[in-house]
Length: 438
Ligand code: PMP
Image (cartoon, rainbow, N blue to C red; front, side):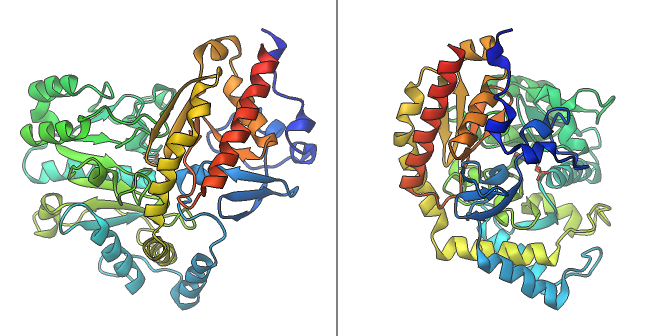
């Protein structure tokens, strides 16, 4: 192995004081033997910019973990949280209790839904929303006297979070390995093949509860669907009586320009899961939107109590922040601004597409996956991390997706100037790594 596979010397990547500083913090999705070498400690944010504890600035090209739609540092969201906390931080929504703020958030989210008369179940994030959706679809068929309909179908390279059902239906094989037996009666199909889906539905439709899919596969590397995919999936689900669940944890609340990716692709699912941008990540909140068909057995008394819910389902402070966030998104035309940025992005990314280190740039809405060429990845296994570290030095915070692509999912309020900054700094970073590994 050449020396090019080694990370840059510590001091030039980040301040060694962070590295030297031992911490009991066990980072998420991390190899803890390596984290101390490159740890970044972040402190402050404004718009699309974040600063670390050494005062270094970065353009946050991923909006945190895809969520900070509004950008950082919005006082109004802090005010909304503080005001709610002063009144009543939260109260359990188990049984018949709730707060007005929780009721209002549900109403606001339902008003944005592409499905008429949507019911909104609340959680604390995407993984909980996925497990909620999975339990609802299985229970739905059970109550309707069809308990054999319990198979959940998902797509290759899908990411549906890391709780029980989400791990079990993961299309990224590494995310399910090593945990022993997971939830049974799940099935992964090729991501873009409606033929395979039709064959499966024709053979096993009587056992299939639901099809789960991300409108654009996100954490798997940002893969937009092939043309016509979603309307065909919707048609097949209707034909074979399979519930359609769109996992909109990334695409929900405006990332593709419409409030939901389902609306963007012109389909009406039975259930939509969401999280992230509903609060711009200022508070943890997840949503599960259910259409009238799914609600019926639970709202008519047939199903009795749905024995499912989280301590923080409908958390009033999270809902207060969500409400304020959605209000600002409307009053400041944030979706339209995101759509304009997305349009500019496609053009401004041309030089990235043409770079010798880049295999492909996939875009949809304000999302992009920048795939590093295979030759470099073969020669230098950590080349994507090298680009990422180099980008940090050049004031861009980005994210490695599965060792092949870099994530681009900025705040919707990113300006053309900031987009240009990103492209320039990424080109410089790619050049530097290309020269180092040549
Ligand atoms: N579904 C999708 C499509 C996601 O992208 C994610 C998170 N990136 C999740 C589910 C899980 O959400 P969380 O991390 O909030 O549990």
